[in-house]
Image (cartoon, rainbow, N blue to C red):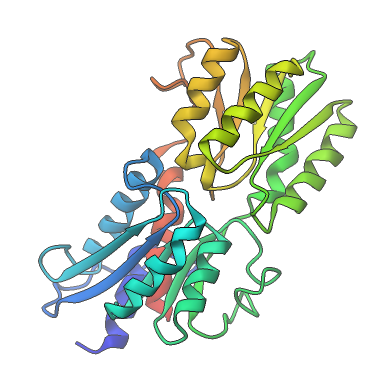
Length: 300
């Protein structure tokens, strides 16, 4: 099978901004793709994304272990590990490079190769961030999915206000290294003013920084917390849940996962809350971006 046909099948598996494709006959040639993710392999988000991606591959005729090899590289939330991981995948001559974790991961992949097709998923505007020069006709060797996540920041504050009608001081935890953080903060501050809320913005990336941020939030006696739209918080989601439970049983948290609807964290049981205390979006919504990524390569 031609390399072009294989790349097309990867797009069909990920489903990126293109029409769905019919199930293809079983492929006979073994292919290799690279998977570069900022997240950890054992996070629930990563597991569900990979499950959806594999199903998409199966529908295009590729089955891992039979005619497909996936080389996985996980940075476990450490941005500084990404360049070496990307370089390793390029050395292994993968035929398509899938990235997970937003704009910064896509940039690392682009720095590592100008020839291997790259398929990214981001909540940032990829044109504004310089990843591609057009949504309709991406330039170079990159394409992917663009989810309007940042624009929903005011809605997250509205959700928190509904949960805590008397809230006055709200924490906003962001990743300072995310190129989209400035836009997120501006939108959140604008929305907070219209709701007569004071916004306390704190930055964190590592586990220790998240511990420190929560301590500061509790010292200020915040009424709720909004998590910035960044995959690094997916890596530390269990820590966030545990801290919320430790510091205040009724702390309301709006937790946002890359490319998905907001998730809510409550301190008391609810019908729509999972065992770890967080409101889970539907399975289809959880996997939508992953399916979108596998359709993208079909058009490369």
